[in-house]
Image (cartoon, rainbow, N blue to C red; front, side, top):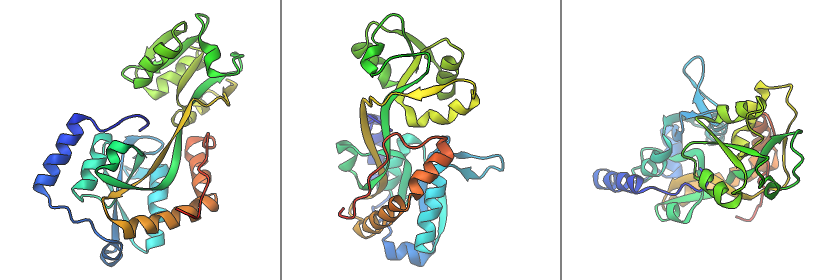
Amino acid sequence: MLHKLLSLASLAVVGAALAIVPAQARSLDQIITAGTIKIGVNPNFPPMSSYGETNEFQGFDIDVGNKIAEALGVKAEFVPTETAQRVPFLVADQIDISLGALTRSAERAKLIDFTVPLHTESMAVLTTDKVTAAKWTDLDTDKVTLVNMRGNWSVDFLKEKLPKSKVLLVESNADTVRAIAQGRADALIENVDFFMSFTKNYPDVKWKTLNDTIFTNYDSIGVSKGNDGLRMFLNTLLYDMHSSEYINTTWTKWYGAPMLKPVVPNPFF
């Protein structure tokens, strides 16, 4: 996810994977011949992807993965891939592609390749009509309580940028939205796209996001280093999926609101 570079532990896993499994990524032709594409998805990241009531994967990534498989004329094989496993699994060729909100970074680009963007992550303000702030810096006052999750990098970021505001720390994404709905906090500053689905649990609250986005990162599909045939196919397909509004429509279906900053499709990738 946003601003999470590979940890030393992840790099160690990559090294171990390389030592055990020789890198031999399946080419586009080999995937088509095999009749399956192995897609890494995060099993604990709803509504991006998670296990449903029937213990089958569901979510935005699952719909996108099935669309990719359909375009290839193969079956999608979803592989549970926790956040720290995404790059190591690609390096070890245990998966053909990785979804799961894979933010592009220079550190990761040393180990894997990326397609053009699949979606964005925008750090912005989620709040209610009770807050009159026009921009995020207006929240730097002791009259405002910001809610966040323990351990998030953004906790320290906001303490530095908005030192006057009060802070309420909670345990989960759902808890942050609940705290605002209950009036224990005034706003959340985070990758708000991933929190929007929880607002539907409080239909009487008048939710809003500020147009003053702090920054936007781009999440792509990860492929093995040098697997250019597969990457170029996915780039072509992603242009079609963005141009047809499939990505935006599917995002709204799962997240309950449009992407804060949609990807602008570019035929020249």
